[in-house]
Length: 312
Image (cartoon, rainbow, N blue to C red; front, side, top):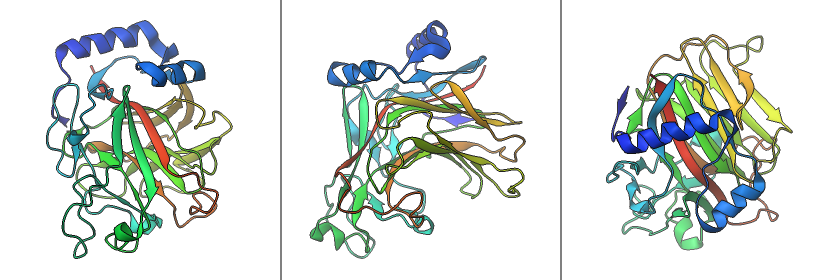
């Protein structure tokens, strides 16, 4: 495992105390003001950290400096890590049929199209919550986006934290509305694909369902690596906790501390990093239909925390 920066010892001890005291019944960490009230009223987010793990990475978004989210993951400090604001090779995934471009405040447009930064900021942090906002592009922006019609945000730990095996968790409220596709997932540090671990994928058009599982070579219908989970929660009614425990033998997926799916034996044995993003549209209208007149803009993917743990 390689990581930078490390979680400071004082924060680590406090984190462990909270884990031990709360166990499987711990609610999402509460922030100040209205965000805290919203989470308390929802009463949904139940965290679960399997025994024998210690914190290896954590961002509770108590630090409101969004400049640490940028293309090269510069900046950051103990307890407030830097995040990269794009995928490794691109700012959207063409193969999925996504209709957005992942931008940050310094993004200057599609190669060959832009010049000065567009100054579009999809990230904000307030009351201990990171919000990734998806919005329609105006005509000026669209001319710089290589044909895409929406802007949104993506954060990855590709340049700051990766590890082999562990428990990975996000506490978040997902956006409702046709076209919104929020996700928290893992990719190999080596840049190969597959494999992939999808801690969750949500659909704003189907707020009572999430998709979770793994993608790897050699899987078949007789041994599926993914599952659609419906009716367990409403992903938009409050903050819920989505987690995955990745070991050498299995990947186990949890929602609010309740086991939902086990992948069984797998071939995922190389270090991976975390990504959280809000895509817009896809090539599969049955799962992520494109936005239409009913879509409530802007879309907001609200994240209370992202954490990783490794074996002691």
